[in-house]
Image (cartoon, rainbow over all chains, first blue to last red; front, side, top):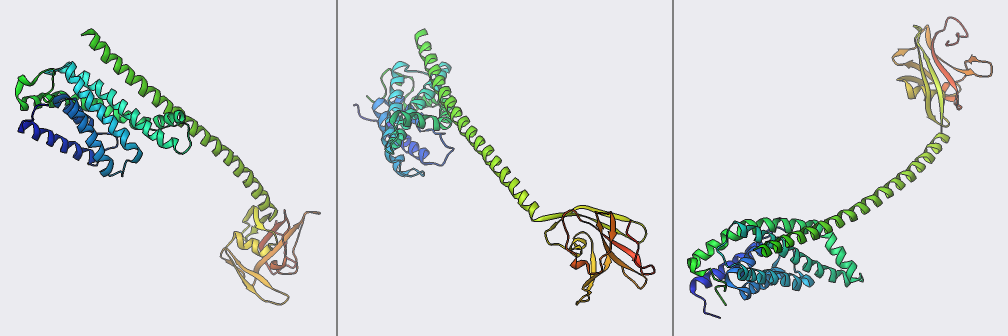
Length: 191
Length: 174
């Protein structure tokens, strides 16, 4: 791993703090920007940083969330957000940028897909807690998915919009801030 | 490039399919819940209707219905048909229930006498008399005791009439 420049380190720290702050800020249920920022950090700084940021954010959120301690759901939330961070890094490898209008559609679809994956993973966590009360796991899983369907739909739609509209301009701005066109490489800034 | 586009289209369709399936499942479950609640509501309503029917028959057994006539001196006749009263009511409580009545209690044998009905008061030449219709021969009968002592029966027809004291006995109300 190469050493971080001061500018990169500051940016990473600020993004991490912003991510945690946004996650803990009161907001409409299932409308969140954490996924976007984790995906963004994954795309700009690499898989390891994206995954670490996702894990740390959900870990802190699990303990400090205004909804209370996440409990059994915590490892599933962490896993879901780690996948988002990893996906950001993988997206960077498949499309190093600079990003254009077509990238907006791609990231919108990726946002929807990753949100769905996150929701399925966290619903599996809920199913585990149902299972502890004696419900068979398949039934508990289907019950958890169906009972949370409307919230999941809000989550998917909102993240589709957020990813589709915010990822490309934010990434392009960050890349310019971090050093201009020379930073558009297959490999992320930190490897 | 085509493969990349296909991948994203496939991803979008996958998301759509999963979301659509779960939402369909959600509304299917909701449909089942509301259908059961509706059926429970209908059952409860029927039970309640039956109970109300029983209550109605119980109330009927505890009450009676009469027809009451008020005959004013100017020829005005006002009928209060199917007036519901508790079992054990008297002619006095019946007129109290349908009109603004003033009365005087003389006690002893005479008892209560009606002195005014809806503002038309007794005076030295005219006063209020009450009658019941003897359905056996369709004749009006004026009892010689207080209206508060006449116990009503189901289907009774009674009358309160404002009559002159000049002719005795007073003429029937109709």
